[in-house]
Length: 330
Figure 1 (cartoon, rainbow, N blue to C red):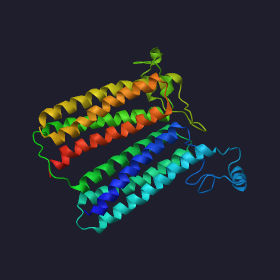
Figure 2: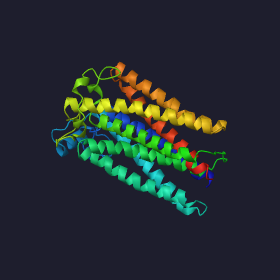
Figure 3: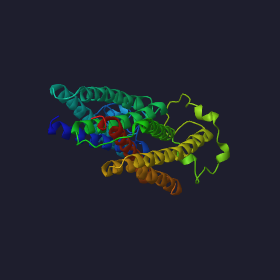
Figure 4: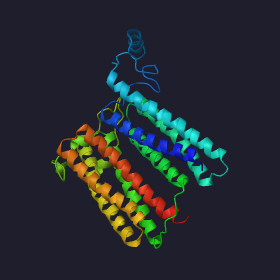
């Protein structure tokens, strides 16, 4: 592929990381309903500010109060997400245009276009269904998936020099298993955030009211509500969700450390060792960061960084999988 194509894919991956970060900030700052409609805001392409615009907004959405800051947070997220969609479409058409592009790159580009469209629909449903937790969690996972696939597309398009990797066939299954464990942990974090369950589990390492934990309540879905903002599940259910997220974090930590150790022993190449040790470093930092967030009672910026670290951890695992499953074959 051409240098221009690789640069465009790299830029799109950076933009996707920014969109994921903005989405997390929108959620954490309770700005998800800053605009009650989609894709505009109170019927406008920007946040209404002039007196006649505010009057029109009141007529279209009676009883709604225009919160300028929250509305701008939501609209900025949408602007960047829309830009990402256009760039992904351009990547797809460029991949089709160049006959030198292999089928994997073309197929991955096409899949990204489909995911972008579905992600836009999830964004619309997030607003029209008033932050329904299943939709919010799906929207979060969709953003992480698009970011991961763009990173994988960039790795495949840049065609680096082959690195000799041998004796890892038996570790590929373990690598996939660890990746699935990490994805489940991210999904649990998304479910926790979508149900506003973070403040319901205070204390370290377990919740102060740990006796309220109920395994059966974990399967309780939010009941029908006019709005799901700030959560509708009972206290003990949200506490249980948060506690399971913490417990699975320990499972994820042990799994990634085990994988990194096994791969480090199996692969002597220093370049590859640097790649496979990165997830171990990031997961250790992520666990410490999670403890700091609870200790300092969930400050917004630290919690936002926790989301960013989760994305970086996932991308580091995607890179490890690429080395073991693709580059070793090439």
